[in-house]
Amino acid sequence: MADQNTSGAVRVKPHDSNAEQAVIGGIYLDNTIIKYVEDILTDGKPFYNRAYGAVYDAMLALAHKGMAIDMLTLQDKLKEMDVPPEVVNPEFLRDALMAVPAVTNVPDYARIVQEKATLRELITVTSKIQDECYESKEDVTDLLTRSEKEITDIVQSRTTDSIAPIGEIVMEAMERINLAYKTTGNVTGLATGFTDLDNMTAGFQEGNLVIIAARPAMGKTSLVLSMTKNIAINQHKPVLFFSLEMSGTELSNRLLAMDSHVDSKKFKTGELSDAEWEVLVQSSGSVANANLILADNVSGLGDIRSIARRMKTERDIQLIIIDYLQLVRAEGKRIASKEQEVSEISRSLKLLAKELRIPIIALSQLSRAVEGRSKNDRRPVLSDLRESGAIEQDADTVMFIYRDEVYNEDTDQKNKAEIIIAKQRSGPIGTVNLAWLPNYTQFANLQR
Image 1 (cartoon, rainbow, N blue to C red):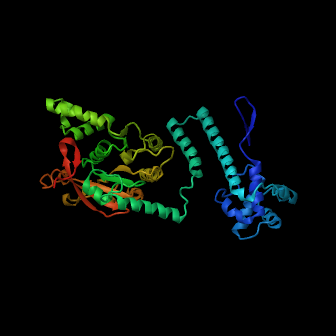
Image 2 (image 1 turned 90 degrees about the vertical axis):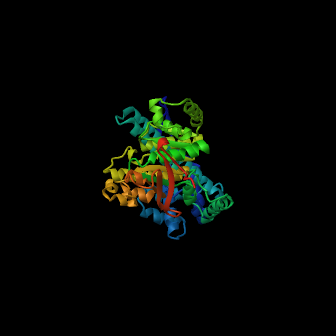
């Protein structure tokens, strides 16, 4: 329970014997206090003094059975447990249960015990990481991911956000309802700029995982870039965009085409009129000033989490977009199948959305089974999602993009797209129609 500093001196790990003794002594004097202490110390592991920890575990066991905690019951319970004989000794127990500065302060003493235990755990983890940095032959990214997870586990073990009285939850729900009541229109979440879509979804809600899926050439990236333009440029709300398929240059070219309405093909040929060049220069200023962070050299789930957390702290991002789900790697784990990997990734993204309290949009591929159906029956359904089970379960909203002209050249629905909302956890399902502007690879509201 001791280590050495850089000069070789022995250092005792953080602990507070007086606080540990005050906890068990206070419970001994007033058994009712244990219900408050147990919220802080769920067992005796945080105690530096193992004997005091054993006494605390015995007290918990007695309390759970509704028994009184006194010298006799404690001795009997300790005898049933696998503890050293000296812990059962009446003299040790009397000494251990003597010092109690103030019974009313016992929960505060319990917090001190927990804080010291957290410091010891942090020392253990960081020492292990340091050793692995010197000795490890594994990939640095995997080591970083695992190290971050171990430290994050310590952080999350200290949080109590997942535990709350129903009264607090109801009050928070009422605040949201009140906000919706006072909001003009029915869009209470993050508006995409597509009127009919926003009306059906009420905007993307915080903590939600939104899956947008389609077959190739339907316009998955174009749809989320159109949303990005509306949010990061028009509304100037910060968006973090992970592009695992296209480069940052390609994405910026698309945004320039959308904002300037200059045919994107001319960017390659350079055949621009003076008027088009003038408009393009103006649009370059708008795109350059967009509240948008692009990450185009990332593929690992650990990197995505790290960057997302940092950008939430530094830029207060309001939306994360990932293009696309099946290209994300679940690092540091042996994955038996692609389906298992996608399951791990979709669950992690949902948890990240809840943690950061913002919506996350993840693009997804669809199964080739869509192509096997007749041309009149190729609108996607939930079972068409690739590795669909976990994605469908974790997602709060699932949307499909369908453009009939991709399959039927003679369709009367040219330059139109259907956004099929196949799942919406807290809202209706249905179809929204958008305009498709092929020269700018952009989606827009339909003219009425």
